[in-house]
Length: 210
Image 1 (cartoon, one colour):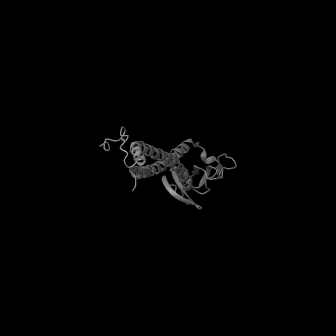
Image 2: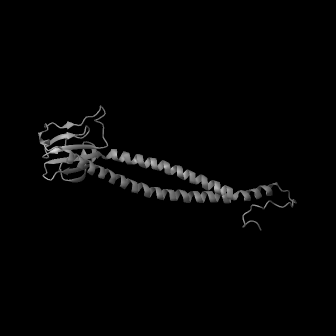
Image 3: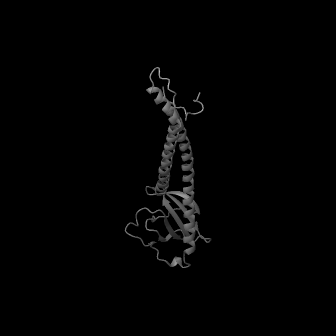
């Protein structure tokens, strides 16, 4: 026969795990949507700032696209890459790891998922009023996904620690609540058949005192 303590611990822990899983799932889904939106806002802001910072004589820059200064690791995937194009045909500046071809070939303003080589990119493009200058900002989807997974992983570790603390608290409260009953059990086991010594009933729950 299973004990009351074992039943309580099992049932309450299952309920706690189910509630934890539901809340965590909702939070992860919300966080992933929020992070994706955060990256899109970052792309828009960066592209706008680059466009506004371009000099009026940008067309006089040499035709060979110049990469912004970087170290030896510059050609590894970046969290954020950008390109500046003149008249949709001539690149004038780009970040070190940005492709040589347009991130968004149609140059239409807005977002797109664009394949470059074997990598899928999330890209944002914006042009000036005259359509002469275009700035394109983007990042490889896998880098964005890795960043999101990293944040979700840290949150999962923190949530797991909280679940462990909750489980420990449940176990301690049940053990503390059942202790008077276990003391009665121990006293009964020690009694001889005709031992009529009163049992210790000072701390018993009201349901068991009769």
